[in-house]
Length: 119
Length: 110
Image (cartoon, rainbow over all chains, first blue to last red; front, side, top):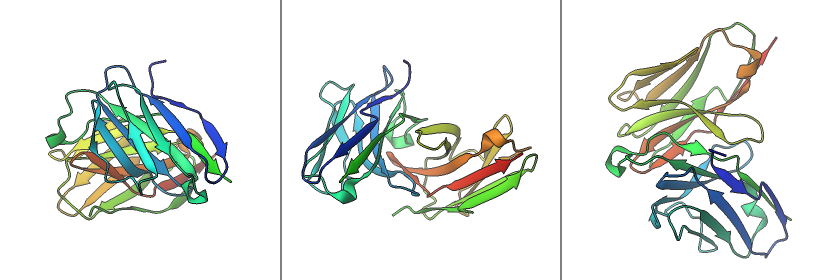
């Protein structure tokens, strides 16, 4: 497929468990974003990668959240000691190269999200 | 801190009407503004991107305008159809990230 792929599409876990959510961006896209969307709300920024490095992680709510992108392609969002308040849809997006930081990102392509439910 | 507001929160109209969705943002120092569509249980689909130097963009029945000085953008949908039913989100772009509004939930009935 040519689009952004996210797995799992649906994850149910118990409070206190560890969760990993995966994002496979469009091939060749150097910028990758994670957003979180609660019911009835707009997406909330979590973290942004340019290549392998996190260029901006100011949206991560606390140190239970961590994301990596070791080879500059696939990214994993990791949540430790999950809480009921972490329940949301986690969206990943990527954008094509040439979108310089000083001019802001170009068009973003979103995956369908991973719905996380913490019981 | 950039804040984005969308009005109305919900809209229900009969097929064929022309619609205006509003988006306002507090920090006018944006690089661009983007409009997205989101269907229930799905991700976001990009509709239009307006660069800060532009005033409007058009795609088919959609037209988006941008007035940076007043901190406003408008999405105009002509001759609405039931297939247009979805949530429409605008996002203001400051530096490296998009800041989203809470969306307008649109229902177009036959």
